[in-house]
Amino acid sequence: MVQRVALALAAALLVTACGAGMRAPLAGTTLAASPAPDFTLQDGVTGRSLSLGSLRGKVVVLTFLYTQCPDSCPLTAQLLRTARERVGADGSRVTIVAVSTDPARDTPEAIRAFSAVHRLQADWHYLIGRREQLQPVWTAFGVRAESEPGRPVEHSDAIYLIDARGRERALFHTDEKLETVVESLRTLLAEK
Image (cartoon, rainbow, N blue to C red; front, top):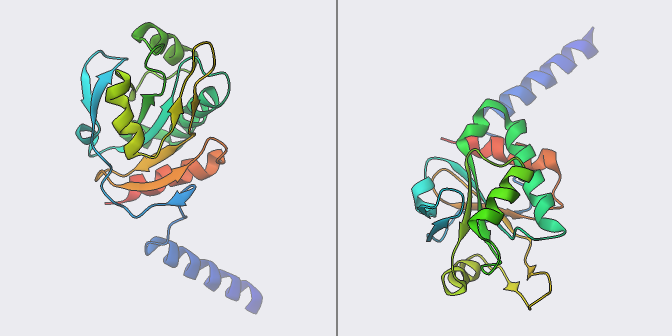
């Protein structure tokens, strides 16, 4: 009986502590919550210009991809789509933004095909531009993107979590565990 009461008390304290603001750490490396660098590029999905700042009020997952990628990009797309789905109804408050690392081949047609294959249509933006437009964005987020004719693009595998206030909160990579990404999204969505 005493053991059962002690266990119930311990469980109540744990629930109280969790309700008082204790949250799971974010995926990957926690960042300093600095404002994310703003930029404006063409959305290859809609054809309209989109700025990162226009997405305030939503949790943004920012990544850097190319449509012809044979390895990490398809895995990244799958990870992010599945994580947003697993969040549940609040997943509609999460926007996935990909910035092209292959300006020569990431055409609207290639983006539509990539989006369809990876079932990324809702709250999904794939931003494109000329190399001179993309380079400052890559630099601002510490992404390297190099290409040679006839070879796959070599680029950094960076995924940023940006909170609804437009602040960089975490940096992780495609090998992050799905459940950690899901919990990170839930944590950011629960913030006021």
